[in-house]
Image 1 (cartoon, rainbow, N blue to C red):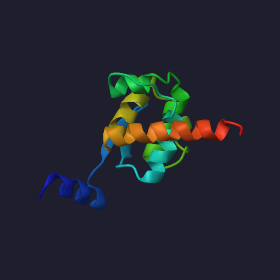
Image 2: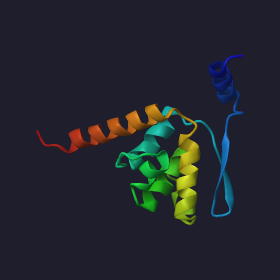
Image 3: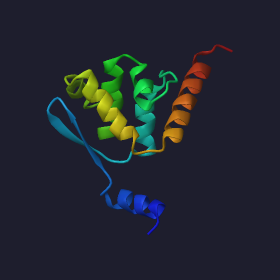
Length: 126
């Protein structure tokens, strides 16, 4: 079976997941749906360009946004944000790295860029 078919079949049957630890608690992250990705990106759209994905994530500097974005990847909403905020800054960054590693980096960065552009258009008076 080729790699693409393996990735798709693993995703469909739910065997493709990662476990992350935040504040001594384990959370399961599955490959994000478009809805979950869009929710997470709404908090990560202010990231800046950098050399590595970790540097891109660290460019925000606000753990509140990280916990909300991570909650979107885990649960599909902000319901875990308060609980995740109790973890360390490093744990949230590591969790986001794991969640984002489940998608193509070029797709993620393009989505962030589009979200940033849409927010600028919406804020600009005509």
